[in-house]
Length: 78
Image (cartoon, rainbow, N blue to C red; front, side):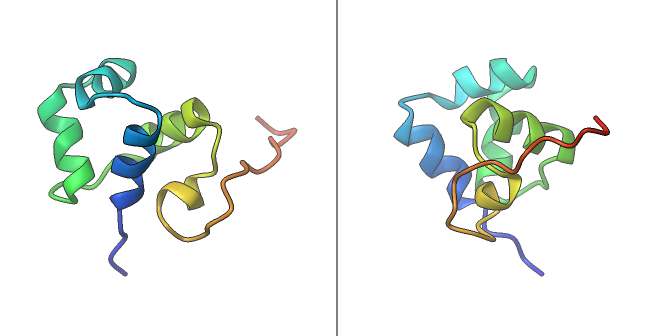
């Protein structure tokens, strides 16, 4: 299953962030982040979760698996 990461770019631009700003938040280089947005590299789940928390959306939304932006309730196990 190929995952469409176009949402990463869309949500970043909708929030008026540059790749450099998001890369800093994630603790990576802009080049690394760019490769995630283009699908050249797979984004690690830890970074995907961090982005979902930062944007206050679900991981499924970022992956394009749903159009519902609202994040899921937090687990009591975390």
